[in-house]
Image (cartoon, rainbow, N blue to C red; front, side, top):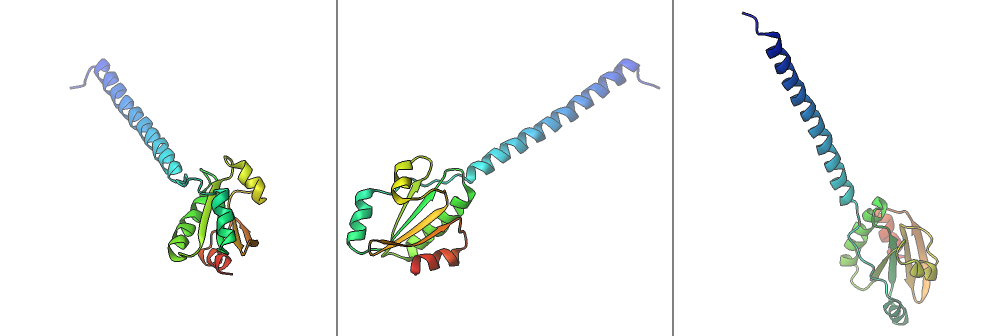
Length: 145
């Protein structure tokens, strides 16, 4: 026996709403996943550069590595990961950092115009500068030379 047309219409409507709801939930899930993933690229580093510390380290003849970064920069995040590891391996080297867009006075003082810049100082002189480098071996070579 056939179901009344009204019943079939209501059943189709319910099925359609369930499919639409499911489709919208997928979109919401994808959006949330994207936002969370994007946030995981944010650099969770603070500015450690301080002029007094920098000058004192230079007077002592220490090697100083300075990197500039930006909160949402994925290249910066890759560099910071490498530099954090280098800091553990090179105990006698001072690592300082600053957020390029926030600490503009530091950037100007050091002549750093770009995020992702790594500068190495030895004996009171700049000896190396690199922009955008994310290769661990090359960054380590930059620090060692």
